Length: 103
Image 1 (cartoon, helix red, strand yellow):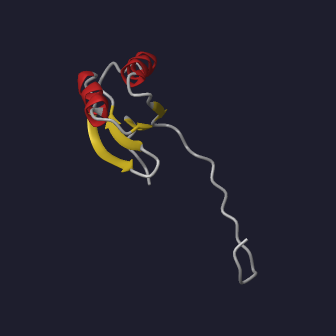
Image 2 (cartoon, rainbow, N blue to C red):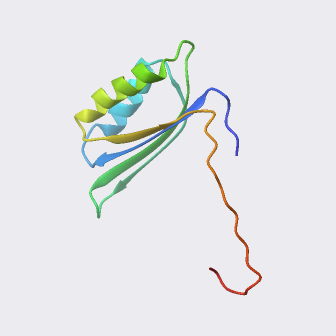
């Protein structure tokens, strides 16, 4: 599945507390980023909140200042985040077997 050349993916997790969705989406809004896809999940068993946001970068987007600002914003929530650049291509290995079982 391909993405537009200006689309980033932000994934993050933190303890489940009020305000996490607002913190992430408000930060993206303040940076001028347009959210194209958003998914979040609260795991009640582990007490952790997970979020994945795809967004388009604005003109003049500065990755380093974006990362620094996001780290500062997420610090209050104990948020761990990962930012995936538009040009990132994961390495994939497809393995097959003639045997009638899974390896």
